[in-house]
Length: 158
Image (cartoon, rainbow, N blue to C red; front, top):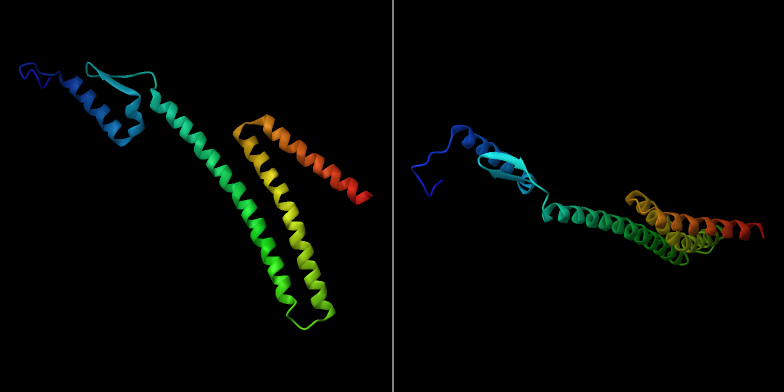
């Protein structure tokens, strides 16, 4: 229209284009799905940007899951290491029965925590996979946890 100043645009077409522009300015994601032809707004097929947004969303969820798994492993390692260091510090104290018991409990607790941390990671991973809808992998994680429970149960009874 700017090329031909003698042709004027109808008032309702100008208003429709202005409202579409206002919505697109307010919500940038909308501008990918709206095309203006002849002054009227019509919806078009979603473009590659929408598919990229979906892939980006799935990638973000995977990253969040990886962060939870890393957090579980980090907390287990740091707490266990802290318990070992504390038990070493207790050895510098005057030796008594209470100190020996505390050292023994701290070391056994730290070793147990080191063993339980990967199991907790498996439980978190299975839960996150289930939340993402990956039922096959969630079932595999649950099966491994079940086998571990059976093995521990059989070991305790033996």
